Image: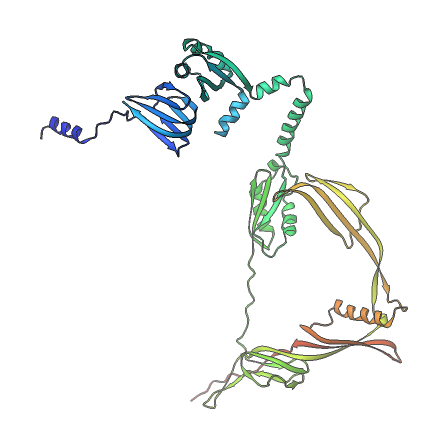
Length: 88
Length: 393
């Protein structure tokens, strides 16, 4: 099989994801969310935070949301997280 | 995380409120410009956050660009505390003294404890290690813990291993006691068990040999109790090391005259207290006699740890020897005699069943007779002399 065709087949088999593979999300229960690879804050409300995580936006909904720290593309959000959504 | 909070407190930080614009843009701009923000909270379009002193001075730029206005809410940290209280010299002096005290006191041993000892007393081990500098109040840097432990083991025959571990200002002496080699029981020689005293046999427990008497029999000193000669069914005989426990009821009689005894009368006693503070002993009062000396230590405790602050109470007394008071009643004398007998260990029996004291007077004067019936082990090993011969067929 030619090399080009092999590569095409490989691409077909891997699932296509719009999510930036460099972005990592870590949850500690529903009380804390650590996002590694956060480019910035898109929208910031009382009960929701929308974050720029590369190719998709990550939305966090909850009560008493607090950005504990936001430095070096690592955001730590704490509070009672009720929903996480991804919008491409 | 605690370290970060401590550092933030030491360097100081400002809690501020930003309002009136775009909070998301404000946070993004601050992050881009390297202004550290933490604990950001949005409450109805107003955000509250914390930043460093330097960060708060730089936060005006992003605030202007995002249309927000900033207002400092609280200034927290050691710097602001010192600034607020710079005129209150007492607080600063007290803080400095307490820091200095903690630093100085952490250089000394606060407590020494012993673990791993089974038969040896804590006091004995502590006194042994005290010779090598391991004591309360010693300067930690001046004591070589490893060498002290090694020297203690080499110089003390009762210890097989020791180590001194340090946990801050607390030293823990860990020891292993030496295992004494048990005495080998020589059962190679053929023996009989004979009675050492007259008595009535109460129980017989044969370990080896043949019983020659039964419980309830009366025996006199020298009687054979357990024989070391075993007769076999074929008529032949062999000699063994007979052994066993034979308990008998033995009657004892001891005679004492009142002049034989003396008692001690307290002539002088003294008690004093010593304040103990980090190894320094401050006596409160005159020294106590060294005879009949006793010491009671009472130290402050924090949880399981004993603090090196306390009071030592010393007691010493001098007794003078005096002869029996002839004015004593018969009962008193009898009690005195009985007590003296016990004290002098004249009765070496396992259990005294009955005892009585009678007063008698003869040509030598007044004396007391002590009778006792005791349950006593009377078995005594007696070697059987065997001559070995070589049978020539």
